[in-house]
Amino acid sequence: MALYIGICLAVVYGLTAMTAAQADMKDSCRWKCLTFAQLWPGSFCLTFSKHKCMIPDQVDGWTIHGLWPNGKESCNRTWKLAQKDIGDLWTDMRKYWPSLINEDPFKFWQREWTKHGTCGTCAKNMSCPHKYFSLALELRTKVSIDEYFSAAGIKPSCHNGYTYGRFHTALSYLGPYVNLQCCKDKKRQVLVQIKIHFSKDLSIGCKTFEENVIYSYYKPCTKKSEIYLYPFTDHPHNPCS
Image (cartoon, rainbow, N blue to C red; front, side, top):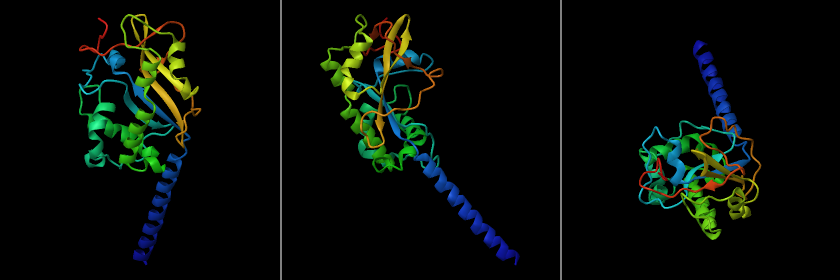
């Protein structure tokens, strides 16, 4: 009898655990928007004075910061990223999704997968690590900030800034849900990150929740003063010294 009761309890516990896991997975799919964030390496290091910062030789433009299902994080901590999962993407990842601090870039990708990628696996185009990282690389090509700025005559410079409107006009085809984020260099606004919002079906534009910018490294750029796009230099912590 004791054995029978033990078996029954084990079955019930197993069903409960399975139901809880299924509930967690279902909950992780309740996001509507994706944020695709790109960084400008020429100004990124201004915000990381306590870390050794570098721009890898193969990097020559805007880089990927992340692809984030909004409102969800770390949905499956047990699903680890392995190098073999993205072996054929390695060259493109190092160029377009590098680590800009002195660390193994794979560690950066592992964090992005655990924190954000696992929350997108309910979508067919992000159902595994290879699809998730491939999609981010695809979006980086589809939304080429380098090309749009070049077409608008916006060039990196330590001497010439541009109005908020000039930047937004260059990206106007992306719709209203594009966030320009800046850091401060003395009294200057310096563009460091651009966030573009996609709906779950990857159509451009999605109204996301309001961000808490109090604890963010970057703040929304404002219209009060010109915005600078700093050039790449050999001393990225102080590119315009």
